[in-house]
Length: 286
Length: 238
Image (cartoon, rainbow over all chains, first blue to last red):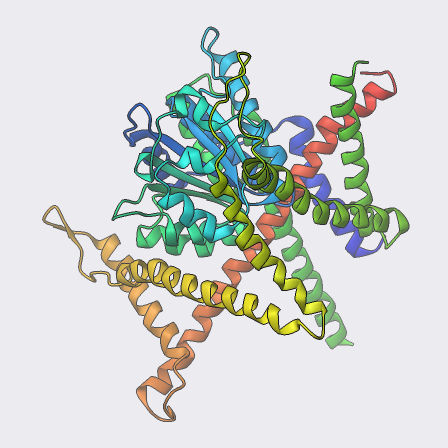
């Protein structure tokens, strides 16, 4: 077998073993994720105020962005903060529908008798084109639900009682942007403010954009950050600490599989270097 | 099997086949891979215009213009009067459509008006956005080198801030090419920025590898859990 194919096989085996056998390790503590938990947990939200969450990701980054969306929505749902979901990336369409539904069903199973219904806990404003121009319109709108118009099923968002009296952007207390490069994160940082008011901004990014996202965290423009799967895994651990029935077992298996893949890469690098060193010294000896 | 469970099952089966087809590239280039690559590109390109029309243009622009958002109640009264001001949407729509004049050699100059307008608006937005984004970051880089919190000298924060400022200055210095720097302190210290940049690129590369592996984990989970269950259901084992 070619070495290249052997490496692929070993990588797949390293990832598949924890998934097949359900192996899971406790995730590492991540300060930025913990900070995000505290921020989301402590934001004061009055009746009529909402959270605005962008799910700007498609199948290409769903591996990292979906767990982030799940933990953020779970926390917002547990706090009973009404969420307006939207996306400025076309391929997020399916996730906007499925993810909040799954989170709500899980919470309802966890707490029989309590409900998280569409129109009360969240609405799906769907895909919104227009990039930065749309964000500026949203910020300047006297009533953001009127500007967002109808949800994906054609119902005016302002018809849902939980979202009927939202008003302007001052009533948005938390803005969440979950994306892998394709979203409007920069535009939200730049334009989502009005008359000195800027809602709490939290961000879930893919691993590729972590170094970039740290700049915003360091400057205080971001109040919390989920770094790839590891960030979501630690956030879910903090959630579990506060809500022991919260089920994060699948996410922990994912995180463990990722760690196994990292260990395999390190082993392969070491083996490759030792093999190269040995073969070079054999050659030099003749 | 009812249609409620048939379509999710079918989409899971097709998703698994597509995943295996794309992974088959790891063995060698083949027709199976090529077919699903084209399917993916076609779907990704087609979904954009369809969603823009379905979720935005039709409900937000076309429907209000033609009065379709007005509801007629059973007693014959209307939910509201028709707003002719919605017809003003036609002005920017027609203006934007002038972009297509580009295809006519005779009227191509009209498209330049639209392009000029777009460039002007984008430029203005970019300038405003740049300052709103960068000024807080600039202010955030002015960190105290000696941090005293609650009357106690904080070693960790002081070292952190000193490192941050030193690295910032060294990297900025590396990219300072305005004056001749041979023999000067600035010139001698410039190479120090290079290894720091290498560390940064290493972090970027490591992050990229982590992101790609996360995709692999998700696909393996999908294949071993969702897809395998769907296959067992089809062959009657599930």
